[in-house]
Length: 120
Image 1 (cartoon, rainbow, N blue to C red):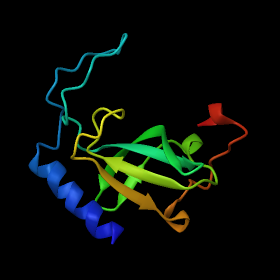
Image 2 (image 1 turned 45 degrees about the horizontal axis):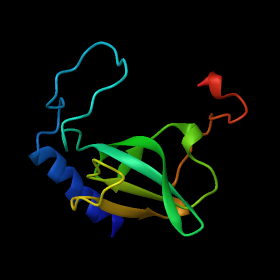
Image 3 (image 1 turned 45 degrees about the vertical axis):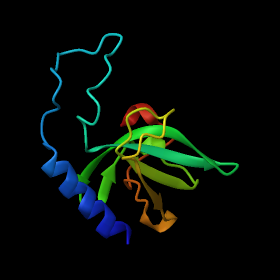
Image 4 (image 1 turned 135 degrees about the vertical axis):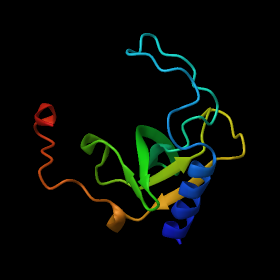
């Protein structure tokens, strides 16, 4: 099941050095830097389906074996999947793990107001 798969992924994340990323952090991101491959094992790509293909919409974080958290504005009434182990979205590298998300497994905070994104 999805819960068992996410549990095993969390164990992989822990075994691979869950904690601070292996690259040096700075106080600000300016023009960005490429991450060290697979140094952020808890980072996920939230993807939505459109016309039979999936497209990245938001990042998220694996916060427990069966939970991913993302921003409220990332969720609407679409079909989603979560991809873990992704480094270059344009290349099938091998360690990617794709987990389909059932619509009943999506939870949006009850105070989220899509008409007032700036409200938090």
